[in-house]
Length: 312
Image 1 (cartoon, rainbow, N blue to C red):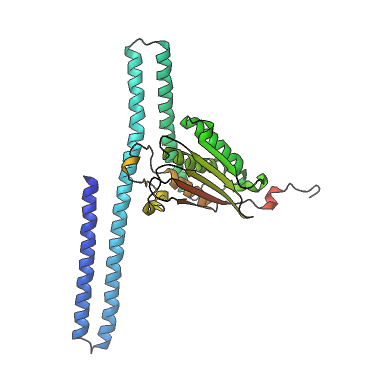
Image 2 (cartoon, rainbow, N blue to C red):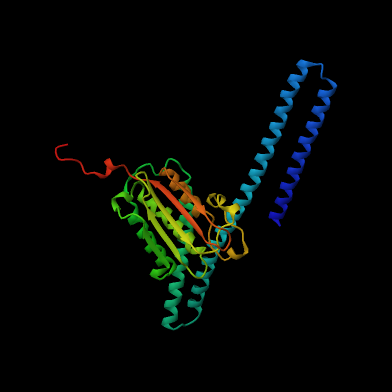
């Protein structure tokens, strides 16, 4: 109901803005025709008219942007609320069952496992929100060191396998370059782990039941290290390719209703990539065709990799 109401508001203000612009144009044209001999007044009238039109356009643009942000904020609140309430309700249910009933030891252990899993889910949701706050702060992450990006990718792949209980063959790793030393970047190891894990986590979640993710690490030239993560999942509509990196944004599709998340994962990836002087972008042939997320980072300068000479 709230989304429908806001869409109606957007349509109303669009119609109002167009009507006001059309009315202003009509009045100004009529005024010019009636007063074409008044050169000075005509000059100032045109300037004043242009300022009015610009003001209306800016005001309407700002209004529509705020409405969209409000909708995204509400979607985020709903997603986080769900991500928090669901595991809490599950933990409470298992605890009440353990309290009221005498269960076999095997079933108790299964309940403990489920509650620990729900606790991990709660922790991850809270940490994701905190990471988003840190990612948006330009002052954080200034202390950098040389990081073995290949090692970061491999560690994140193993962490993703464990978290999603995947077999080893679900994530396929490839290197287009055998120069391991060339895969070092200057940055924060913690932030890079977060970015790579979020890309992998996103690919796995949107793969559906059959997870088949291809991870390619390449050094195409002397300046860049490129990570590409390709899945065979639900794909991304063309209109959403750039929007998926916005804060709180989630692709709205019926087939994705089961996918859990807060809409912050790829926003964090983009923020971290930009902090490291890199970029990230998405490619997809459309819905049902899978997607590829590519992150490019600048390589660490060779002078930082070489050990200091003796007596220097």
